[in-house]
Image (cartoon, rainbow, N blue to C red; front, side, top):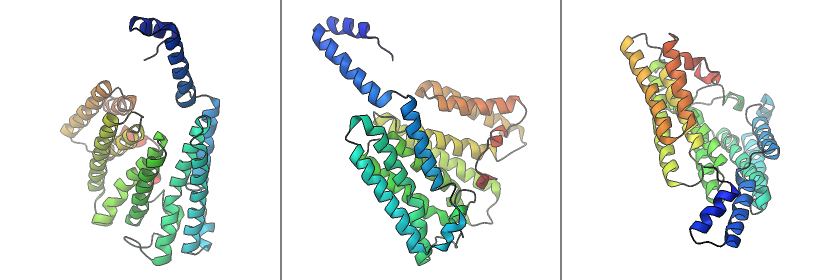
Length: 301
């Protein structure tokens, strides 16, 4: 809800506040908005820089890391994470640099998978079998990644106790999304058929959506957005990759995505509208798996 300065002053007078109190209240709200809600060029630069660092230390890792021993990889990752957390902790109390502090803490959380990977390599503690290079983490489904993903969620939850920064839920939601695929590989092995894996992924997505809804109802800051996003990616992605030619299945698929559009109106969340609209459009276009055309990570292919 947007309120102008004049509307605030008028409402304040009507409720018994003085003009000076109304002016002080407006200044306080304006300052808070500029620091926390404004999304200008500086904030875009902060987030873009953080994503570059996360990508360089995650997505774009090279095989050069394979030349290090497991304990060395873990030590390097832990050292980087400690530096990022300490820098974030130093900046966090300063209101003008709160976004920078939160992003540094987020980068620290994103070092968790590499640190855990190093320990697993050093002590051969793989939940399943040795998955090979860390560069395989993002593109390939493997049950041995589950411990790395669970640790990422745990560290993100711990970081949220010290940094009330909603973007910290992004690496946790991302890890949970990957876990929805890797957990099925760990539980049932590689012989499990693709359709059943899709069902597990969709069920995991529903669980993420339920948890995100609980966060949405019980927290003031927007901690639920990333859970909704990756929960919907998991849920609708799992349904779309089933690729059933049954007419009743197509009807159910359409009904589910129509329900997502209705949910978007109830929760006032556009992300449900986007995914629901894509699903309905795919049915109208005669391609019930149109969502599967989205460039998902190749681990889903």
